[in-house]
Image 1 (cartoon, rainbow, N blue to C red):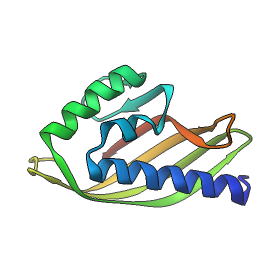
Image 2 (image 1 turned 180 degrees about the vertical axis):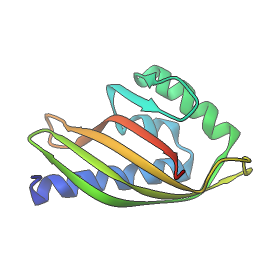
Image 3 (image 1 turned 90 degrees about the vertical axis):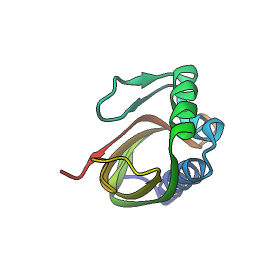
Image 4 (image 1 turned 30 degrees about the vertical axis):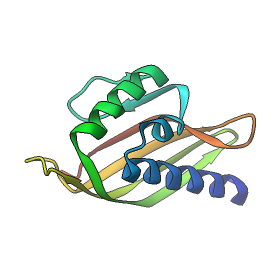
Length: 129
C-alpha cells in the first residue's frame, strides 16, 4: 500500500505529465521519466531513454497538438519505491487522426527517486477497444 505522501507524489507526477502534454513541452515531458524510462505507444517500438524520448516527443508535439487530456485513475497502488497508475484518458488532438480514439486506457509504472519525487519507468496507452 502506498502512503498518503507517496500517493500525493504519484498524483503530482500525473499532473506534471498532463501539463507538459497540454503545453507541448517535450523537455517537461521527458523530465517525468527516469533516464532509462520506456514509452510504449501503440503501433510503434518502445522508446527508451531521455535522448530517444526527447526526439520522439518533440516530433509528436510538432505533428499534433493535444487540446484536451484528462487522466482518470481507476487504480493507484504500489509498495516501497514502485507504484502503478492505471485508468482512462479522455484526449483530443488537432489535427484529428482517423482511427485514433479519444477515450483510451493508460498504465504508468513509477519509481520513487532518492529525493522522494516520483518518475515514470514505463508509460503506455491504447485505444479503449
